[in-house]
Image (tube, rainbow, N blue to C red; front, side):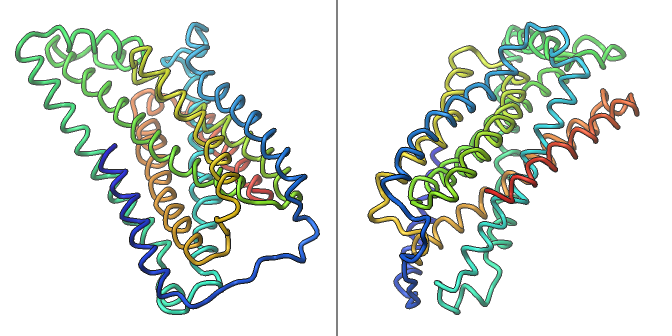
Amino acid sequence: MASNLKMVLIFIIFTTFLCTKSLSQCEDETNNPCNNKSKALPLKIIGIAVILITSIIGVSLPLITRSVPALSPDRSLFVIVKAFASGIILATGFMHVLPDSFDMLRSSCLADNPWHKFPFTGFVAMLSAIFTLVVDSMATSVYTTKNNSVAADGGEVVTRDQEMAVASGGGVHFHGHSHGQQKGVIGQQLLRYRVVAMVLELGIVVHSIVIGLGVGASNDVCTIKPLVAALCFHQMFEGMGLGGCILQAEYKTVKKVAMVFFFSITTPFGIALGIALSKTYKENSPSSLITVGLLNASSAGLLIYMALVDLLAADFMGPKLQGSIKLQIKSYAAVLLGAGGMSLMAKWA
């Protein structure tokens, strides 16, 4: 987490330096009839409450419904719902975050050189995806090494991991192996679930704050209403995807509550921050465009990587879906439905 905070600070320092060289200035849209600060503020406060509630419901739903047999992680319905949520996360990266970054970093408010001479959005998104791969791989290696060292001292932790993974459906496909191999494979799978949950949470938190900041700083009544509605849909189903990952990771109750809390609070916090900074934060100023544009590109790369590699590819290439063409078709339909619904939301958000 500390390394990611350093990365954000480097972004801010880098963009501040570049902004001092940007001579292009843009005027505020004072002639926009929808700009009304007194009417926008109540809408934003309502938006904070509604988005907070839908975020909590979305991320908590997989955890609460765990006791329902049909929605347990080893059942087909859970796989289909997770595929739907993964499609939403994928569309969020491609259809919302990435296009916003392109618009910001190609804005006429920025100087021609260097912002119109080089595709910074694609470059930063690519670096972000590679960086996510590095974090994903190294975190898995670190956890595996720790797990193996504890297992060498005594098999208690590995045995507990085995029981957790069996509860999440990870151990039903390894009956042909010996007992020692079974424990190692199941423990590794559980570790992967935990790394995926943490990295996905990080990416969602970053882009949720950025989205909330834009809503909080805006006084455009005509865009705030549909934007809040779209964000509710977005947070609900994106939270379901994250909640499914948290469930499979089998964290202790304290860590589950902490992850639910941070996901639920980030967008409302971003809106509140935007309201507080509304006097100084200008959406079309060079510094804001560059900072938010680069953060959006970074978030897009992370979300696209996570959706394709750690969620969709991991599930579709896993033994459960590979063992059933019928379940694959249902899951593909769920992915397309989730991605299509979130893509449609790009019309308003």
